[in-house]
Amino acid sequence: MTKLEFLEMYLDLYLDHFTVLEAIKTKNSDYVILDIRNAPAHLKKDQIKGARALPVKDLANHLTALDKSKTYVVYDWNGGSILGKQALFLLLGAGFKAYELAGALEGWRAMHLPMEALSKD
Image (spheres, rainbow, N blue to C red):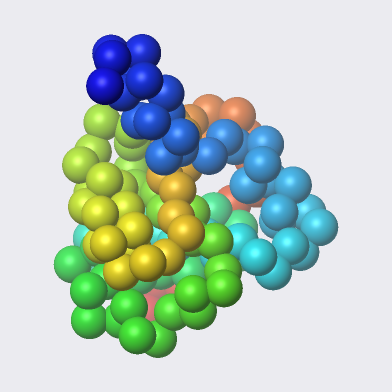
């Protein structure tokens, strides 16, 4: 495998913000956005609109509850975190179609894209 082929394969693991935003706007049920941050809601404060919280530390125990016909988009605090890659490893290894959100939550916020507050329970 050449370096170029490796880079192309690596970049194919990411989904851009606009594809995810379009899925949110059109209520595209093929995409499920997973907030995989390992933090309680009171620390997170908010999430991408419509995301489902499933911390990566709990993901392996919940794989059987996920729908294999869906496409999962995972995100963490920022693109430098390894948690998104850990979630992809678990999902792809279990036969799911999955991507990491390019730029993670940090990039989403920077573009002022739709967010929703989390309850402080």
